[in-house]
Amino acid sequence: MPYRLRRLRRLRRPQIALVVLVAAVVIGYAINAARDDHHHTGLRSGTVALSTLPAQAADTVHLIQAGGPFPYRQDGEVFNNAEHRLPSELSGYYHEYTVTTPGSSDRGARRIIAGKNGEYYYTSDHYESFQRVDVTR
Image (cartoon, rainbow, N blue to C red; front, side):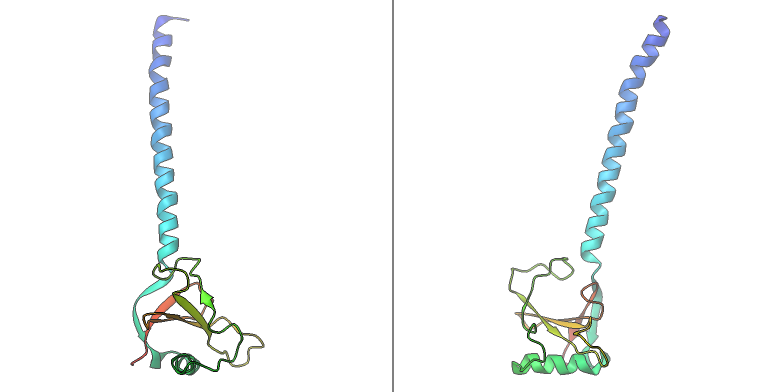
């Protein structure tokens, strides 16, 4: 093999390795960014007034504040925030409550999540997204 061809081949290996390394870093960054976006997109910005939500959401908040009784046995159970769509807290911090859906034969998708410090979150799509609720409005 001619000297020039061997020299060219030796120069290409580091360049190929560099390209592969850069591609791996870019792909890793993109995957990490996608994970971060997935974890933080569930909580919509801003706060929604309780009065703007379905009337059943206000009924649920009033039951929570009164300590029950709740229409479903699952109401009041710990919400683990497994999807990390709400602010991170220790296990047991959040509890979930059903917001009844008229005409539904089961619990439906609507929930109020209550935090230990008195914050409330509403989801109409079974934990895909949340809105913080101002219960004074």
